Length: 468
Ligand code: SAH
Ligand code: F3S
Image 1 (tube, rainbow, N blue to C red):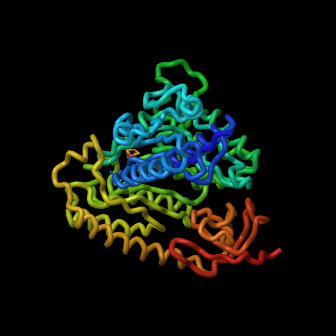
Image 2 (spheres, rainbow, N blue to C red; image 1 turned 90 degrees about the vertical axis):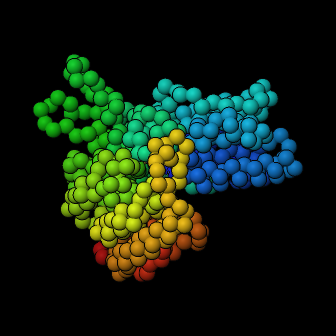
Image 3 (cartoon, helix red, strand yellow; image 1 turned 180 degrees about the horizontal axis):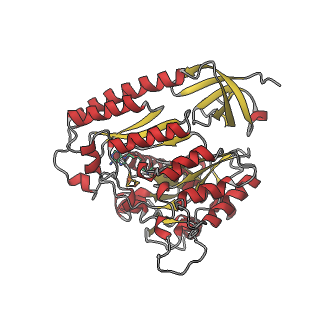
């Protein structure tokens, strides 16, 4: 049986796509290899969001091919995902040993194409075309993966694409138009996962708060059950399809926790804020990518909210769930960002006090509007601002994490820590990673631990003595 090694770059959507491809291949008889050195097929699932993500994957493939030619003649090489989509055949022109280029709407054809390539029926396949209904094809899970241990958490893709067209972002071009799965389809997948022991589900998409928006039937159509959800035409304010989806998933018995990523701040309407207050399985954590604290820059970015609106959402979320953990994404060095704009970002971070924020140095992406904007900033300036913001974010994060010392928190134990297998790892509802001395018997348990100390964006816990 051929073996395949898949390496994933980029976001959780990519992790999920790789998992679905792996599950699809395993179902067809392939085995999963532990590294490129022992694999018949090497697939790199790529990211295009920043230039260095693309360069890393290109360098990796060059190295893999170099070694493979000596040690594993006949090895098959493929790029999939966002860079495959945006660069297509150009990848083969550049690296002629690459056999497969598989776009973001074609993951479900991986097994068929690899079968053809391995049997030498075809030589080189590039497929980056659009596929109707591809949002419904990422369904397979590798629950009992290579390690054969049960998965406690799972990711479920609810939609593909993004129509927001932030001026810096390549995703709308690599992932295409927003397309959502139906609520019954998603709920069926979640039910199956829960029946197999999953306790926590993360609903995934590039812009999950826009879920179902583009599938709403035309207002002139006769009243009929809403294909994306319920509650239409009943004379009360109707929740957005995304909130309807959360409600439907919330009803699944045995499911303990619901998370989602990535939302867009403009999607935090009052119905979603209220959902945090009324749906206990929706954990008290939110990732709100703010990108900048300056209204001028937010407008240039085409983000669709102002600083004041963003702060209002934060205030409402904290009122609904006081302990809510808040994280964000921020870009430094967007074209034309002045020192005053940047200081607005610093002051927003001081005001909000994110538990953590992921900082990105602006990277010019092909064919995006921002790439053509005047006043692209020099690298040194971007580096300098990045360092200043990082220092602030780390200082705030450290302070926030320290407030947990001595407190008892409820964690869902996911498995051994990735960095130190001797320790077990779980997460608080507010999405803080907690490490503790435990064993396999703790996997999948919701348990109370007392926080004894903190590390960098990590808590260390002791299983607490729970009063009977
Ligand atoms: N909604 C998606 C966004 C993908 S990009 C998601 O969160 O999965 C993730 C983050 O990368 C964005 O929030 C943004 O902060 C950053 N990013 C996107 N394009 C970028 C660019 N051209 N340069 C630097 N950072 C970028
Ligand atoms: Fe990108 Fe903006 Fe969509 S960051 S993924 S275009 S919401």
